[in-house]
Each structure stands twice: as C-alpha cells, then as structure tokens.
Image (cartoon, rainbow, N blue to C red; front, side):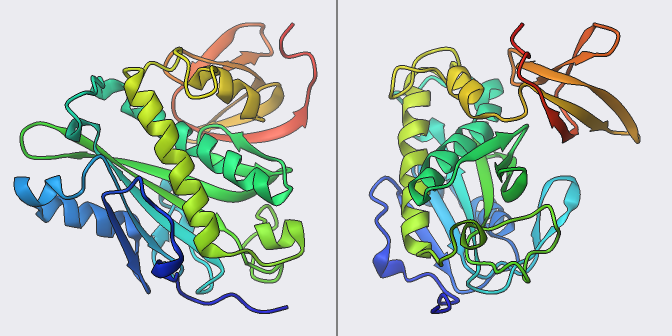
Length: 288
C-alpha cells in the first residue's frame, strides 16, 4: 500500500467557492494562523477573505481541540482545515450574530455528507464530533472573531483522521478513514468535497437568514438534518459539566439554540449548552 504524501498538492484542489485558499506545508495550528492573519488585516485586506476562505495543512503540529485537548497526527495522515466565514461580506445576507454558533453543526453535517462517499456511515456526536461507529474520526473547534467596524466572523477548525494506521491512532476511541475502509484516501479530494459541501450549506443557511428551521438545499431544515445525523439523540449519556459535575440520562432532543436536551432519571428534562457527552448504550424508544 502506497503511503500518502505528507503535503497537500494545491494544484489538485477544486475550490471555486472560496475567495482565498492558503495551503501550508506545516503549521502549529490552522485556527491560530487564520485568527492572526485576520487580526492583522486592515479593512481593505480583510475584504480579500470574502465570504469564505480556508487555511489547510496535512502537518498540524500544535493542534488543539475542545477543552484545550492536544490533537496531533503524523504528517500526511490527517487533514487540518480552518474555514474563515464572513457573512457580513455579502450585503445580501441578514445574519443575526447570535445565530453564528450553528455554523459548527453545519460543518459537521457537511463533513458527514462528504465521508459517506467512502462507504462509511458517519454520525455526529453532540456537539461537534464526527463518529464512525462509536469511534471519533473528526473534531470541530469554532472561534468568534471581532473585526474592525463591529462585524463578526467565525473561524471553524476541523481535524480529520484520514490515513492514520491503527498503530498511529492516539487512543482506542479514535479511528480513521483508512482504518475503516482498508485503503488510503486522497487528501485533496476529501478537502475539496468537504469544503465545497460546506460552502453550499453555508450560503443556503445565510440565504435563509441563519434560521435553523427554514429549508436548506434539499428541503430539509438544519434542525431536521441534525436529527437525522446526530447519533447522540436516543442514547443514554453521561454529560460531563464544568466544575467536575456529571449528569446521566437519555438525550431526547435539541433545544432551540442547539443545546442538548436530556431526560433525567427523575423524569425531568434538562438542557445543556456546554459539556462533554459520553454515549453509554443505544435506545430505540427516545421519540416516545
């Protein structure tokens, strides 16, 4: 089996939806790089980022995930991408800033759609992990950036385990596309697919004024698509909360703002907007 190249070949990318594409041979963190570049840009330079731009590498050396967890992978075995999303760059959009948090789960949907092309069945674990089976192959980290003039942009960082071998996986609860399919995948193809799918979803979402209940491209709303793709719903879960607190129950729904709704053993339903979810065992009666 041929080993994948350690870098991304920019000439092989198909990214017509992006104003700026930056491919780095190596970087500490694509999110940090994108944030620094945007912070240093004056108003004229910032316009060059357009509605959508991206920074990508196959060798991220100081990546971080949620709760400041370290994310590392051998060069060429994973894909790290940061999407710079600036809806205010298009005057046709009317996007309330408080709705920008939905972009994290919109990117999760775009990623699951793209990975299905490789004969796997990915799902979303609330709030922002992509699983194959019950093993994590991808995580998403978002950052809100204030630009001059009072506008807000979002940087969405995604780390995809693509060509890692079983021996290279950092923990037993992780997996990669190579492990799941038995063969290596083309980094440029995956990047192009994920990015262009996300661009289509994002522009449809902005056209719908960032309303998660309005139809997207296929007639289903963002919330409806999340219900189809989020494997957390219907499972018994433990939610690890700030302050070393834990709650146990059955994840039954998403709240109006995307928070997870958990039916506790007392019969009460509580909502949580932050926390780390652990799936315990499947249930089939969660809609009852």
